[in-house]
Image 1: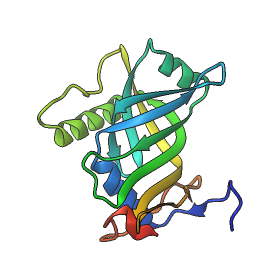
Image 2: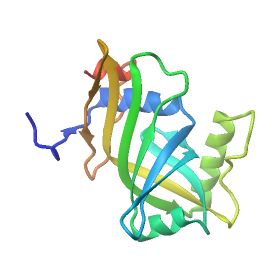
Image 3: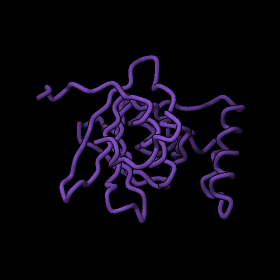
Image 4: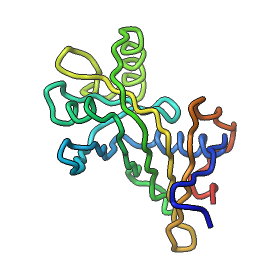
Length: 175
């Protein structure tokens, strides 16, 4: 049995499975730390590039002020209409604002490509902050044989390894 804070280093198969799950959803529950210590959780839209998540928040929001004060955040994602064996994934990491115009333009193109029917999520304008979450902890959850199973993976300072081709065949294959 492992200690509570121990994590398994993430491997290419897990990267592929989690990235596939992230790509199949549109909404996440974002948890941030308020100054008084209470958590604040909000459902927001996102787009992913592998395991990295990008989202937009209002600059005048409490959520933005909370992230500026403490960039540690957690998210929970469960795709709509997910397969019966998929429960979802929880990620924890640090959120940072993206200010490079070239990267914002790349994200705009990702949003247009992923959501051609609607562009309401389009990251632009000075009233919003474009944010990136680079996960440090990834915890996929699946239901196997009627029981919920979770596996916690850590991502070191060098980032996640590349996704292993052909291994993104559902989170339940990780168990």
